[in-house]
Image (tube, rainbow, N blue to C red; front, side, top):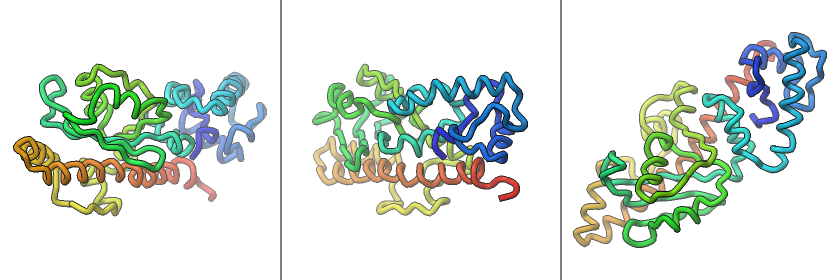
Length: 251
């Protein structure tokens, strides 16, 4: 589903009204007309006003506008439209407290390339700001509560970009548990299925004691986490799309 299939940002339009529009053949903004069945004149005016405002924002690739206007639980709808501007990322740390613990590695997958920044070497505030610069859409798993505030606190940077946290999208699709649990459920395989977050801490401590191979393993693990986010985003948004837009009565 693309944002131009959506009418749910409009005040007074919920899932039922939006589905009624789709069932009446109004499947995208270009199909809308004021006398469509099941929509009153006030709501029709609001829809037309939204479309008039949203069209130039879409041409400008203004993902922040749509992140503001779409309900939080419907932000997954931005993915298909802004996937080319997406910035997938994952961090590893020495613990869960972003005030006391340390970020060890950050992997970012963007524009077909993966960058990994390592503490004590390439991981700096400036490098992070450059890596995330002008991101159209951040994509994480539990990043809203963990990765983003951890980086902002640790490096005094601002990551106020449109954000799709796949943990919540997965829950909407009936997929619960941590990242690796969800990956197994949807069939995403790993090269190192036996590694966990605890192993990431252990590997960093071993690296600090001089084991360079431990860092190689940690970086590989972090990069795999990040790359798998793209596959997961594709699968979970497809599930939500089919449930909301593609599987309606009469089709």
